[in-house]
Image (tube, rainbow, N blue to C red; front, side, top):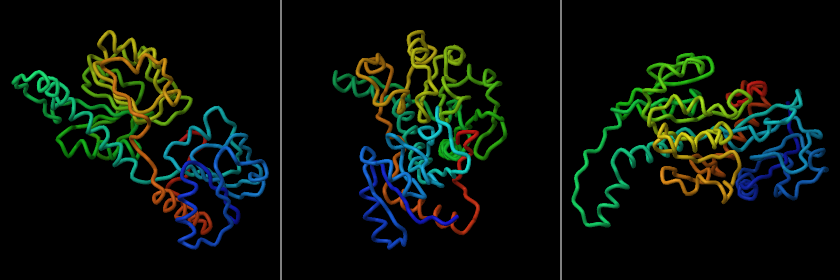
Length: 310
């Protein structure tokens, strides 16, 4: 496939314009803010590059869509995809970033940072033995690239991560992988459940009342997609102590509405979708590598299966 006209939008479009200009890429580019993209752009472009479909998005003459993020649900969720349009995603340091994010909150909890902070404010000397990370039963939903890298990082601390996936197929860095319909065998033993799933028809509200009822005072981290969690079910699980701590980086509606009760729950930590961010440099590098492979008719490691949604 030969690509000539490329429409670039999203929050990195101006930074990408500078980097691509420096690299002297011999293509026709339009760098446009999302809210300024017009119908003519879709019929001019062979390729669309962005984090999300721009308002009034249509395929026009587009033959390739490249997501600047690892997730592609904004392009596929509740949207009919054109069969002859290639969809790819950005592959970068997301696994490393998410691993560091999860580890930071796990260690904060196990090393009692908040408790000691309070004791310090009260000038109290009260030793509490920290819990070693290797003593924790960690269950990871999602055994793809990000889940595997997270399992690898945890393994360095002596953790023996258990994976949950649709197929239950064994993957590197996990001691065992269960299919989703057998998760009940391990969830009651879990100290931590980490959700790193894409949003698909199968994962929408997967973490529901039935799921949370299987947990026994576990901690729950969501670094996948917000709509995989039924937030009312999570609230109930926090209230009845099935979940003792929730670390949430993603939400069904973003930004999280001010009226959400999750903001004020004492056992909830909220971050604004920052566990893995695409840098302009990573965005350009992955885009150019993908473009080169497409034009050379070479296999793509970042091609999205639009039927599966990831």
